[in-house]
Length: 319
Image (cartoon, rainbow, N blue to C red; front, side, top):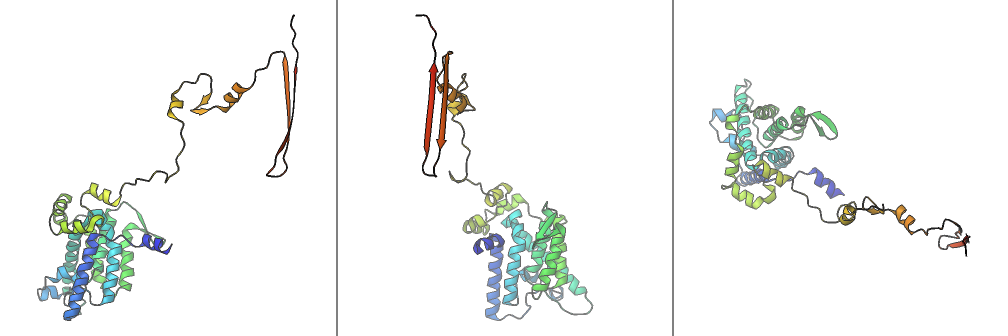
């Protein structure tokens, strides 16, 4: 019972999410072994002041502590897996890098404009995960969503997750998370349609390395870019085994097609009324028959019946 309940709550791991998690874990191992300077790959005003453009692509995979890494992986798996199922693995990875870099540019520019001089750098999966939620809500047809049994308008779900994740996840920066939601909303409105990857182009990239390798090792966890293939992968056809479902008994075809003029069959089944009447003995017009039956039962396992029948016949004929 417990495992079945957890199976319904834990999202299905897909190739795109798994690839991002592996890259983040590898980077965390490297920075731990070589003892990197804290915040070496975080984004902020240093992107423009020092020309650290490479941080715009690497900051989602960078985490300062192990607790931050685990919490960000959990948020990524729960909040962005639905986007991969809706767009495919290739387009999901492309949108992940596109929205993360766009969020990093906007936040770095905002941090540069701050006059107090306080550097509040950010990193991790949280900003881009909130952007994925905002993009998903723009494409869904649902008007309401449910979280812990509470109903919310679909458009408000990213802001609800913003409050929860900002309060629970360490080293999260509220202005950057707000910018990430707005970036996801803009991509949902197709304000950056020129940068979007089409379904046909993604289908071609699936046949090239490294996506061909990911598809070969991922199997069903790899979500195709084509809509038809994606439906076959996510919604496989159910072929129940014989006898797994109760079936209704139908009349034999031979009996339903035969013409019954005597009324012995009704809708393909034997008509008991006509059958009993046909087997009843025919009485002579001048015969009188009477039958009396008395039954008495003693207990569930025994039965006695007493019968008495009388037949009186009178024939009138000429010798």
